[in-house]
Image 1 (cartoon, rainbow, N blue to C red):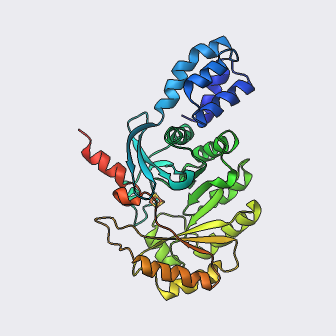
Image 2: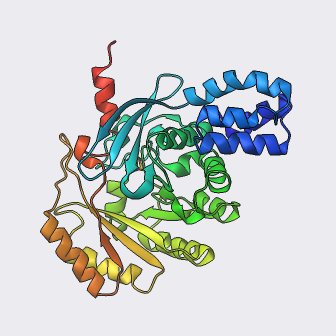
Image 3: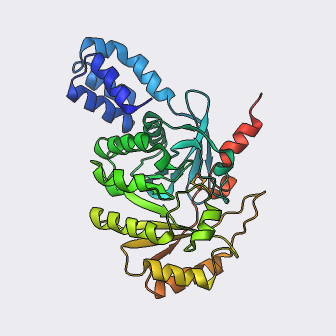
Length: 336
Ligand code: SF4
């Protein structure tokens, strides 16, 4: 369900701008029902009041919690059921973060990703993205939303942008705490600067070599790493927050000295943070995770050479490996 469609329904039921704003705000902030209803009773037109229980049920049906899988690092992976029976994953991150999915499956087909193996099944609507946040807020407070779950947000731009706008305006989430994560796409660099809410940007770089990038991310747009960083830099200067470059560290693939020199050439002096994430091994895939000590040494050297580098573990990964695996397993055990 598109958020614009929800707005139109509310208006058709007699909601004025203030009612519409209030109801959407209560939904995205997951305010407890009884409290809200008592406060709203005298405030809403009768037709709207009478229609609300059904509308509420519909909004809550957009994202239902099927199972929750806590991890030792304080994260929890949520398997979320959508209204047509499809499933996506959201991850509750430590310190109030939430990772949401923007597509069921993904068309980019990154070689090291489980989600990429299923191809694109369908888009996740703006309503379903916001519903993932509302659902997560029934579990714990959410102050930051990152679009790093299943899917490529650039391939579902209209829905992602309308969700970002509602989360940034009514959802009590600071604009730079909304993180749009993409492999890089010209449409992103056209649309994001025009939005009322300008999210922070995370760009999946993974290598400084154009040929290797084309192999690892086979259906990503053919922007070279240099072009990608130039576009990222423009956006960072516009928004006044740094671009986060994502680097999944794959042993023997993109952890050599040549890549480190390439990173320094590309990112030194840029308004940027490099997030280096040692790959989380996935059975059946050929890639290997480097040791933590080696990853720490690489990150330390880059830092010394003038690239702000953060070594990160992928929160929530210990439950089931890479993104999309929880869903893959849920499908595998579903009764037919
Ligand atoms: Fe898609 Fe992201 Fe997986 Fe690549 S890593 S296939 S963009 S979900």
